[in-house]
Image 1 (spheres, rainbow, N blue to C red):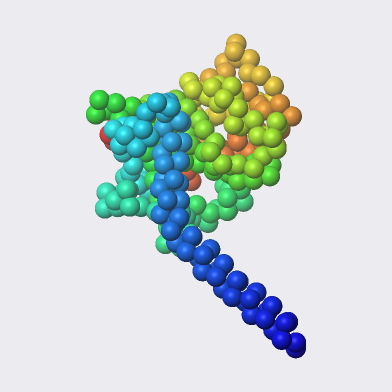
Image 2: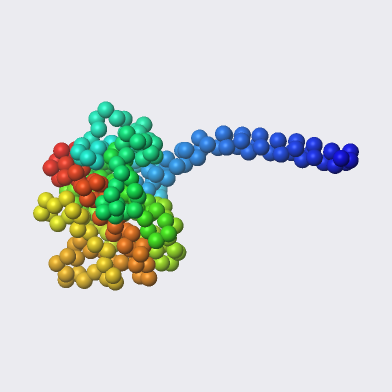
Length: 259
């Protein structure tokens, strides 16, 4: 090896080492800021779903004043009193074998394979009284796992707001799940028919809902040109508001057990 080649390799090695140190240092320095930003984004989406988000207000202030997180056990629908929801890590619970429930093909309408029986939910209070509940839900669309928040009225049945915060659906087609006009259709829709059934009745129809239909309260307009994404939305609801999802919890809400 020539002296010139040796010097070149030495310089390259030193530069690689310096760059590695700089990159690692940047990751360490920026990680706390990333965690803070992720937390703020989560809170923002919760507030958007519940209709409390305002551009001229501080996210943390509105969240702290109105939202109380709690952890619920989906199998019983009851709050887990000995878990501090402010410290509960949902991502870890979603991978923890002691909490995971494997889903059969018949039950797995959302295409998620398994679910943690412990879920963090967000109680939104007004003047100290329960006003609505924000629930996290996710399921397969055409190309991606779509993740969102649904706000449900204190009656445990009526949609107050809906917001997808993460998806990879086709822009202009399935990506219209982000369209404010489509999201504005959801408030007032009913998840259940009021008969006491734990099976959700919500339905994404092809085309537009007929307002004269006796089922109009349970129906939402489909996304034009995005049948499979629309099916994914419906299947997500069919799963999360049935027996393996929030149905037991929302029954407790309707009974007035959750305050």
